[in-house]
Length: 520
Image (cartoon, rainbow, N blue to C red; front, side):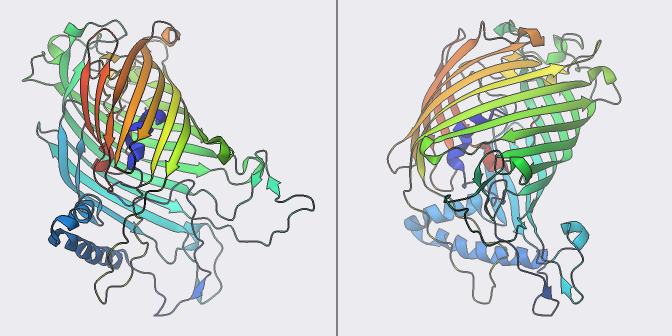
């Protein structure tokens, strides 16, 4: 399951542009056409990835010079240490109950000058010339561990296809200021959202997770502990619809194919018993055996263009996934996800951009793609969303409990839902969430106020998902996000019937790229 877009945006959106990896040119980003085919010569060669890496290493060494400038150099020094390229410190929260992790990360952006025609989908160039490359690569790798010996390590490579639309003279139709195309009646732009293909291989080992049983009526005293090791290796594609009647409608097609390998183990040393001492393979399906899955998925995201004067942004996701377990078919299942997010921007203020990066050392050429500076704009917003997830099984099949979504505190992806309840408090194959939030920045300082409400429930059957008997939780707090430094959330949650909680969460985006796969 991908976390609800509206929940993720509340905790992570304030850090947009502040991630430790260089932002890739993703969907919706304006890009520049590569140059026309050029004759092959010694002065116009394809720069190697190795040379690109060396240039960035030189630049990072120059930027670290801020660390020698005393107090005034602290912001620049910290930002380079946490977000620098090609190396930076990686720090943030792992899954709840597994602590803060720290380690080292690598990030590099590479744009080859030329590509083979078969790779770029173009015709053979004239003799003596080469095709300009319309692909840009964003490469990330990270490894980190926490105090309870939990860890995460991953490799992520994203290829972004840059726009190849050629500029054409435009003469508006008499009587019209601009011509529109397609069903959405928007201007035909020279640049278009970009298609991306991402390869991911990530391993996670978590030594303490909670299991209270399945369903919405489990008791707090039924808590047990377990550990989980999972590897996810696969590829996913994001393809915007940039032609035909739907051109400009904000429609994006999604597809994925992954191998998932999950192994459950006991967890000891806590006040709660280990899972195998209380539950069986019947009460906790999938407990007795490790599971390997071939997992496919397809869906679409719709972000329709609305007038800027409305200050409203819609973000709708519909996704279907198939989990096939070749070695134990009774654990095969299908999943449907609908995530309807709405954001009303109350204001947006530009409070200044950070200073430009220091120039490279003498003799060091410019890097292939310059780093994108983080923004320090501040916004206020109201968000509301509806999230539904349902699992479908054949007769005699069950969903392994480790792939069930959870409510309470934060889930295994560190997404907060019903935050006043303990982590992983309710678990079942089906879930419904209604979420609302208000966020307001405090002047020009990097602190924002946050208020939120969740209404949610889980169900063992799809028929159990309805808008009655929802559990609720309220939360309030502050977010701290200074420049490129970690985003910190400090909050207090109350409501429901199981007490209240204080929440401290360090932005998980600092552990690596924002395209990490869901662990369930």
